[in-house]
Amino acid sequence: MAKLNKEDFISALKEMNLLEIKELVDAMKEEFGVDPSAVAVAAPVAGAAADAAPSQVSVTIADAGAAKVGVIKVVKEITGLGLKESKDIVDNNGVVKENISVEEANEIKAKLEEAGATVEVK
Image (tube, rainbow, N blue to C red; front, side):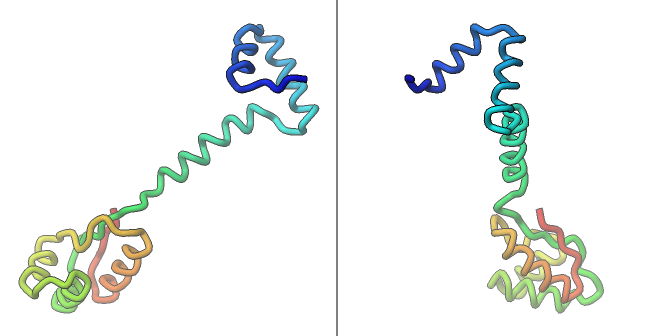
């Protein structure tokens, strides 16, 4: 028996009526023990879930809190910037680091929250 390629199979499906397609799906369920319609729906959903989670995020200070000096020191340590630049980031609720991995962002967030800041990861 000749093996059908994808294009030939789709061509054959286009020539079938709805009843014939339903019978084909039922036969596939019986033969393979799998509902082809469930597989067709599940595949795009799994791909969408992977795409939904960003791979690159930014860490932003939402509020420096009461211990502002400590937060400035942590920002200085994380960014490698000078004291004035770090203070400007904290004062203006600025971005501490951009386009970083989610793991690195979580580490930075933990350090800043430990110093007393409220942090957003976007």
